[in-house]
Length: 218
Image 1: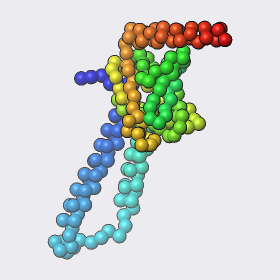
Image 2: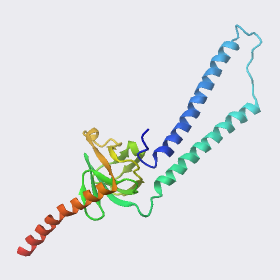
Image 3: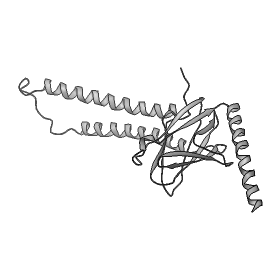
């Protein structure tokens, strides 16, 4: 059995399963009761059947029980929301830029890429920027989704826990080629990430030297 791709998979899935189980339980219960009452208390079969004009016990029961369940749902949702917004202080910060119809990434040391490279078991905080219209940064395998709004920087974070490549999608309709707006999160081992980072630094060095030479010649 494969490990979860991020730290949010288990909490999000547990909350989802909790809510679905409650919904399915009441769907089956209410449907079964409706069918039973229609058959058992049909006026043609049971001449003594009559409508209940009012019952304080029933009113309290079907008000209090759903209220308690909703409070539990809210609690689990709020805990997950807080966890997703409280990023670790040692998280690697990456600027994410969304535009019709592509994603790009810029690291704090100036490295740019069209794939989000991360180190496994190292938290990553993304600063979400839109260059044009509304987008939504969505990584299904990590169970994270955050709107990307023009003129505002939203944030999200995750802890990748399994090496591999994971899809980045836009979950907000943003134009004709919205369905083509996808990218990749590449989760690497520590050695692989270090090698990739060093390669990017070396590739950026010649470009910087060339720019410096051109300025000097002017």
